Image 1 (cartoon, rainbow, N blue to C red):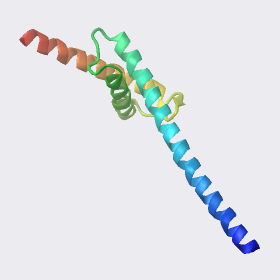
Image 2: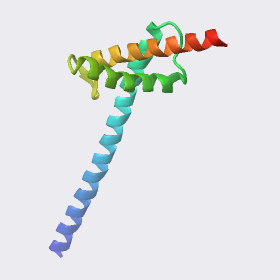
Image 3: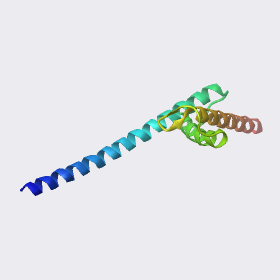
Image 4: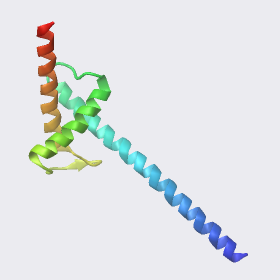
Length: 110
């Protein structure tokens, strides 16, 4: 009887641990995307013109900008939710300027 109880408790703890791991992983991903979106939106606000696709474009600009900024200037400064703030902002600004330039060039040709 007590061996079955111990087995059930262990199984319950394993299921609870798996549930917590998945939940915290999803929350971490959502916070990472939120931070990338804020950085992308800030870069979009500073560059003349608008990023395509609205908030999704801002999140994409933050994610790609984070990758680009880390490749160009490395990891330094504070990070929040896995996003290095300064390199991500620099990369998102570069990306926003590139998108704005392409938008202006395509508008002139039409």
